[in-house]
Length: 532
Image (cartoon, one colour):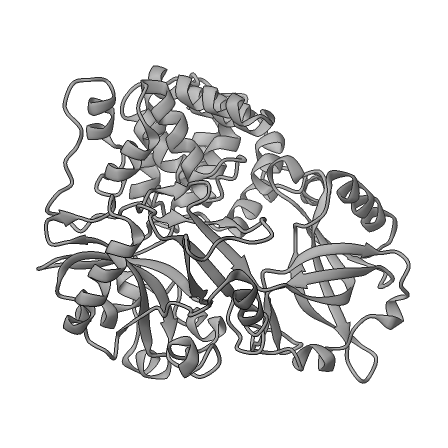
C-alpha cells in the first residue's frame, strides 16, 4: 500500500496537470504487478468493490477514540477518510510492517472483494491497525468508493500512456475490452505482446466531443447544424449476436435499457441521444418530440428495470452518427458520407426505438441564430455544429464540432446550508444549498451548487459561512438567511423528491448578490413558471 498511498498523497497536493501526469507515469512504470493494474482501475473509476458505508466507518472511529473529538475533527477537516486516517489510534502491539505482503494493494483489494458487508468493518480495522496515516487514507478511499484526488479517468489513462510512450487514443481504443488488473495492457505497454485485439466483442469506442462555440459566427457551407437534445449520449455496439449500450464515460448501461438493446440486432456501432418518449422537448418541426430529462432520470442507474417502468418511461434513441457498419470502420470518412450511410441504415431499424436526428435547414448563420433563439420555448438544449468534412475522432478536436447551447436561466436564491468540499476544497465550505420563498414566507431548497465562483469568491463565501453559522449538522452548517446568490441553470423540472417540488439542471453560482436583500429573492411560484 505504501507506493499507492504515496501516489494518492502526491496527486492530492500537486496542482499542475503535468505534475500529476508525471506521478502517474512513474507509478505505472515502477509499481509491481498486479498492484499497478488495480491502482489504474481505482484511478479510472473501474474498481468494483462492495463499498463500506460511511456510517460504519463512523461507528469504528467512535469506538476507538473520543466521539466528541471525532465530530469536531470531522467538522474541521471535512473529509471522512482524512479525519479517520489521522485520528485512528496506533496499537501498542502493532508488529506488522507496512510493506507486509498481506497489505499490498492487490491483497487489500482481494480481501475487500471477498469480505461480506457485515464483516467489512472488522476487516478494515485490522488492516488499518498496521498502516500509517497515508495508508489508512488510501485504504478508506478505496473502501468507501470515494477516490477523489483531482484527476479524471482520461488523465489517469494519459499518465499511463505517458509512462510507456503510448498514444492515449490507442489506449482508449482497447480500454473497454479489458478488465482489471489489465495484465494484457501492461504486457503490451512493456513490449511483451502486441496491442490487445478486442475484435469480436461489443466493446466501447471513445466518443467524439464538441467545444463550446465562442466565435461570432461560422460558415454554414462548412458546417451542418443539428438540435442538441437534453438526454444522455449513448453508443450502441452490436456484433450481430450481442448488443451493448454504453454511456459517454464507457459504462455499460444495457441493463437499464434492455428494450433498446433487444431492439438492435445489427452488426454496427452507432452514436445517439437516449431519450424518453413525450411532448416536452421539441415538436414535429424539430424532428420529433421527447420527454424532459427528468423523465429519463427515473431510469438512470438502475441495474434492472420492471415492465411497468419501461411502460411509464418508454425509451428511444435519436441517432446522430454511424461509426462502424459490419466490418467497415467509417470513422475516417467525412461527416457528410457518414450521414448518408446512417440515413441508408435507418430503414432496417425499429421505428419505435430509433429515429434520426434532424439536420436544421438554415441558409446562413444569422438565420440559425434566429432559430436557436426559439430553443427555450421548445425546451431544447441548443444547437450542434458539425464540420461537414470532419472525421469521427476521439475527444475534443478544435474547429470540428461545436455545441451552441441556449442561454442559461437565472434566479436569485438565498443561501441556506453549506458543506465542505472534497480534495483541495476540503478546508472550505464550497457546496451551497439555496432556496426561494414560498407564499407563507418560508425558504424551500431549490438546488445545490459547488461551481461558478473564483478562488477569491470561494474564500469570501467560506468566511461568510463561518461567521454566519446558526446550527451544525455534522459536516453541514446552517447559515443566516441573508446572502443572495444569483444561480444560473439550464432548465428546471418538477420533482417529488424535493420539498419545493422543483429540481434544477446544472445549477452554478453566477454572482454573489451582496447588494440585494434576501427578502427580494425569487419565489418558488416564480420558478415553477419556468418548468419545462
